[in-house]
Length: 238
Image (tube, rainbow, N blue to C red):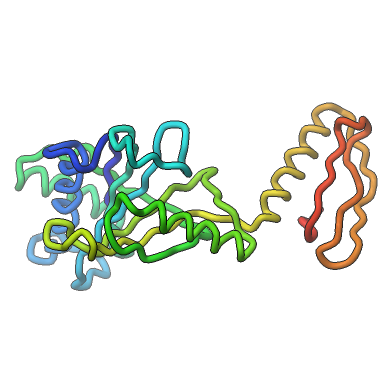
């Protein structure tokens, strides 16, 4: 991606977010039109610039976004780059755009984001009503045995409509939220517990017993009662 990080209300006129979008498109179209100049990008082919995307969160919370306090938004706004664009090509585009447009492109960055497992839904309508869709996504994920995982990922939006030319009720936004299998969380907690026991020097190797598929784990790790960990579900591995 070509990306810009920032904070604040995205609806603010001439605000940081809208300026960031101008920077993104400046670099994106410089790369797209590079074939007309002297810079040759290996593997280049003609393409359509992908839609605008964004990663959103607020201080202290990646999962619960308060749409009533947009001034507290933190974001990474970004546009996907073709796979043939390398870091050197990106750096050339920054210099080229800076020289031709007489603008400061120092905030743009060559950004990689690992999406991982996520739940995705097409939201139609106002951005302010996204929470209704998000709650449905959360329930769907839970029904499939998944839970939210914002440990290192973010609420992700892909904008398929131009809000300047589209009625609010017809806006289309792809929403992606990170999830993990519920048992993955248990694996993480079990692993953390084992590491804690190792550090305390109280680790008792013991045994792990399971009764049938989806049965209950009954063995505790650690020697003291307060060190014991009981969990249920399928095997997390040892």
